[in-house]
Image 1 (spheres, rainbow, N blue to C red):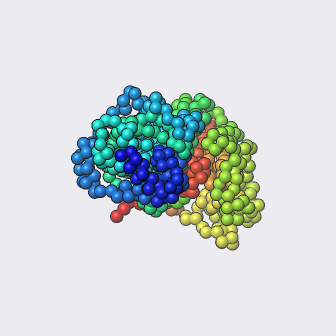
Image 2: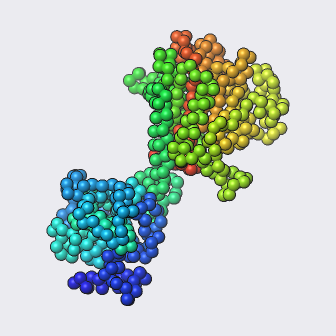
Image 3: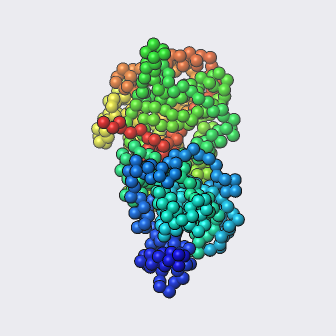
Length: 577
């Protein structure tokens, strides 16, 4: 019988061009798991992250002609296999080991063909591919945490009631790609050097997969990818990288701030008032409060400052903000920020903290101060890539001076009633689209976007904003023409906004009144004046620095993705009709 199996497998290997008539058939049979697939590139290299390349193995493809859900469940029931059993640990003599750990421990220490029959263990994960060499021999790759390991399953080694080839074959043919399974056996290497588990117990089904995972056809349609994110992660495992980078970014920021004695806090998501940023809020209604309108926060800034008033000198929050605005590659209605308030901090302190944090963050994630980013078509670098260097000091651009250099007709006195018509004339002469509504802060912001932001590929601090643009910031000069504020731009995108907080309640009320005029002029992103916050300022806010970073943009930059939705586990999608 053994000779028949060897001969049968040898003929199969010869058809695939992997075995010559004079080859040692038995030796090749032991390594059929590698050769059956036809080529080394057609299956996953187990020591590397899982690939999305389509399999070329005819047997593996044929094995996934999946029956209907009802047929599948009935087949398992007929074989006495539970489709969704309660999870139990493996036997004590087969301790559980993560698949990445298997490769870490034995890839470089075992010789080709070595078998460690005393080194018994269990692994578990999702079936990635399955190859049937004969009715008595299967090779099954299972995947866990982005890595696969080959399970060599033979009737000869398997114990546990599968004494005949028919029962053995029926059991392993019933297991399909996508199923969650556990394999127990000893570790070794095939003659081609592939670390494998040689099963000595029947493979256990932990969860049944009823649908075909489209690994061959792929999943590239944006709508389908993000509406079925679970399938996107299975078919395109590389997309997990952005989520892993996100976790590392959050961990680093928390560690960085905690080491500087900041206290992490949580502030309200829902509130009867909205403030801290110019943005259109989402609204809802509270039944408990008598059908009262509530707002989802657009920024935690005002809450953080009230905590500083209450005696908490260093506080920060990492959390979601919600702005009822458009969606594009750099904006999302739901996004994550890190904001902190630090008592007795100057603008220079905030600048230094930003450089230290970004430098450490980039080095921790990438191992270098330099980051390769997608550049413009006019980039001098190959394939339109730029290299961004986060080694301090970062470049600084004085906004007020630079705007006057690039737009000489900019009025010297922005508080003059004729300032807006004069600036609108600049827009017309330069062919710049007007913002809507054309308020003074919006006009100035558009000029900065047109003239200055395109120059900010390298980490660049924009400083000396016109005061009219920063109603919550202290002035940087006695004439109150510039604010003590900066923005950090990298790769032409804003990552950080920070300033010395305005703590004069009288001036704050005046600024809110000016904003109310812009709101009346049609700017629905301007929040209503927050008199309760002004009342809180009357209890004395210490000189304080406020700082905010957009987490999603930072993650996109470090992960090398071009759209913010790639950084989110489940980005918002337009409702389906």
